[in-house]
Each structure stands twice: as structure tokens, then as C-alpha cells.
Image (cartoon, rainbow, N blue to C red; front, side, top):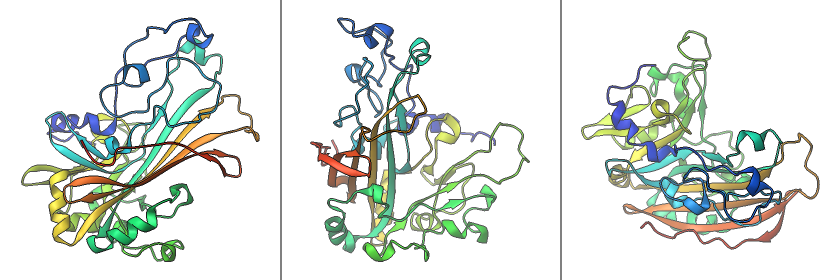
Length: 339
């Protein structure tokens, strides 16, 4: 796939998809509990040296204990409302970033346990008049129970045929008639993004794998007055309006929309509603099946665009045990508004 002519503009979105410099790694001394902190390379992936793009942050010491809190987990607001290198404001509509605790080769060779964090973030179009009942319904919800519509996927189709080819009908953005959960939630929720998995052929030999990423649903494109894009970039008279910058600069796939397009969505009587599911885990590398002692942290949050600002609707975090069952509720206070 050819790089768009304004690849430099896409690279300013580096902050959006969460690429970072060299990670902070735990040393053998810190793993063995030596006195005093080690002095590895500075990186935003260290709780002690946190700056730059939002990312999962890890202590410099190795741990064997299962996570029991939300320390180091990025605030979801920082994953939704972002700015690029030129100061342009963007909203992330779909992304699934994950962060693994960096380990130096000598520690990794010992197959030591490793902390990991991940986030599933999805935005939905919702009628403005439905925000209040939807927010009440969302409070206390555990998004690991799949209460929201799944983002559609498109495989074995041509990217250039999006969004009008009938083979892209799954990405129209309408309600899925086979969604058995639809009757259990407020009506009118429409996905904003669809996953494109490639043509399913070997016609492109320029890379090991096919280019994949997120595309906007046809409904979202219609709302913001756009149609076909080129190489995961959709433009209007002001420049890039929607894109998945990871296709050019790497990093986790993410569909992002220029924030000022919210006004066009509002003109249609709609706004954006986000769900965020977070996992904070300890991965043991012995290939054994976890026993009853296994524990992990799960958090769920909801956000809504109120005018041109993103606001928290509800948030909960729990420590879980096999079953799965809730072991106990955890204290977690993500920011309620931007800024």
C-alpha cells in the first residue's frame, strides 16, 4: 500500500495511537530486591518517570503478586480525547491498545512473570434525547459481559470498495438483526467503526501480512458528509477528517475523528457514547493452567460527548477471581471531565 502524500501529517498523530520510546526495564537487581531504584532508560512506561502519551505504566521492580489495584492504568479520558503534534484535537472512536511490562533479555530468559494491561475502547452514535436513560442504564455495568453492540468486521473485500459495495454491508453501521443482546439495552446504539482484515488473497507481496485497520461505518461517513477514503484516510475541505494513523506510523490500530466534526453529528440529533473495558493482569510464562489462586483486575467505564466536551458517565473497578466472580470492589477515580 502506498503511503499517503501527507504521511508527515499522519505522523503528528503519533500521540493518538500510543507509540513510545525505549521502555523502562526492570533489572536483575530490582528483581532480586536490591536497595534503591535502578536507573534504566527514561520512558513513559514507568510510573516513576511518567510523561508523554497515555500508556500503561509499570514499576521498575519485578513482581510475582497478582494486581490488586488500578495503579499505573491510564485514565480512559486520555485515551479518548487526544491532541496531535500540531495541537489539533481528535477523538478516538475505536482502539484496543495493550501494554506489557518491559523486561530485559536476561530477565525474560528466566521466564519471570510479567504485568500486562489492555483496553477495549468503542464509541457509538446515540440520539441526544436517549443520553439520559442510556447513562442510567450504563451505571454499574460490566462491559466484559458484552452488553454493547460488537464492532462489525469485513474480510475478503477490497478496501477501495468501501463503503458503497454491497460486500461492505456489514459495515453500514445499522443494528445487527442477529444481536441477541439488543433487546436488553436501550435502542438506537450504532457502531462508529468496523475492522478491515484484508482481501484474503496473496496478491500483495510487498509485506508479510495484509494491511489491516479500522474504517468508519457508512452511517458515520454520511453524518460528517464524507464518502470514499484513500488508504485509511478520509478528508474534507479542512484536511484529514478521519483516519487510522497506525497504518502509516505503526502502533495499535485506532480510528480517530477530528473533534470539530462533533458539530455535524449533533446537527443530526446524535452524539457519541463510549464504553471502555480495562484489564490489569499478571501473565505467568510457565504455560500452566491458572489455578484458583489466579486474580486479575477488571474495570469498566462509560463516557459521553456533551456538546464539544467528553464527560464521564460511570466507572467501576473490581478484583476478580476464577468463575469469574468479584472478589472485592476497588477504589478508582478517573477524571470526570477533560482538562
